[in-house]
Length: 502
Ligand code: ATP
Image (cartoon, rainbow, N blue to C red):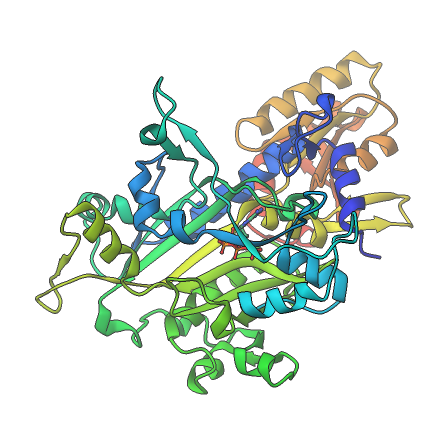
């Protein structure tokens, strides 16, 4: 049985994964704090993304830009003008609702892709949920948080907290390309905080006002749109595909290989297929359930002001199929805008074609950390009735704790001392905790619930033979391993060696 999002929030609070922010004072809507276990899981998730998409690639360099930027960055990007949500306001009681969400809840129909005109027409039929008055005309609400830089609080000192990490990859484009000696095609990646004053934050971590993103801007020579040298890596991947045309003709999404989707023209460029496939591969390699993913093309009326084509990677959350990652083809929109607003040349000399070009961003994979955190939790969560406790089947690279070391009996100093030595040995390389509180069964259950893949127990035989038992979280199988081989054994398990093969 799948947990509702509220039940997941309760579980996260109980286990120290995520808390409502400043709950002591009644909380702040759409803002959350990651607790001891959550901070580790989130850090691991982000480290794995960085390893896969930055460190293990030669064509991508990473940056760590600031949260504040010159306000012109956001004028040039179009955010000051266009980063708005459609808003309904009640003229009588002042109630404010995000129009598309309100219409979806009130009518039970999807509002994805509806134009402002269509939303306004539908809102005319509906009433304010608080006082039943008709709504005012459809308004727009800019979601950027503004602040002031310096001691004077006037229009000239306004700056924005970044609503996405992406723009700095454009603003720093020339410097990064030169410093990292990148040649087209190449990408610039960044992960970190983003802030959006969402009208209606909801569904726990899914829609927050402060969240984190992991983003790549991938630049190509404008003539390389149909030439992705890496597409072979994903061609055979089969995914549930939901094109704009399938949505318009009210057909169901259909499973196909990404190679076929490109050949048939469903996905217009091999680059899009490549980046959708790579993210899918990243999720599933870390234990996410492939059957709960699909890719959906934006309807023409849904496209952002800059985008030529956009596909979302979606996940079947308990509240429906929702976006995890958007992958837009932004063309040369951003670099051109920044050239115009800054007056600086951002073109690049491409040695292969001997041409000076303004590169195109063929894909901008933009993934939410907090939404990914939810995905890994949902797919790991298992209320194991036989064991009588929850088991989080988290991938060992994501698990907040990789090994828990126990003395069999907590009142025997010789066992406690040896277990501590084993724990310190493991801690040099892995995340390990030492736990002597409660019965062994209780300690196993506690570690199962927080997703610890291996529990290591020191018993009386360990004192004689210098070995330990290691217990596998998923199968509960146990093996004896010499202490001298313990680190090497755990290393092999983390790398994917099956426990049964020890
Ligand atoms: P949505 O339509 O759900 O509001 P979006 O299209 O505005 O999302 P993007 O601007 O494409 O989102 O942002 C990229 C990614 O950042 C999203 O796919 C999502 O994973 C994450 N993200 C965006 N807004 C939020 C938010 N308010 N809370 C948590 N994550 C978010």
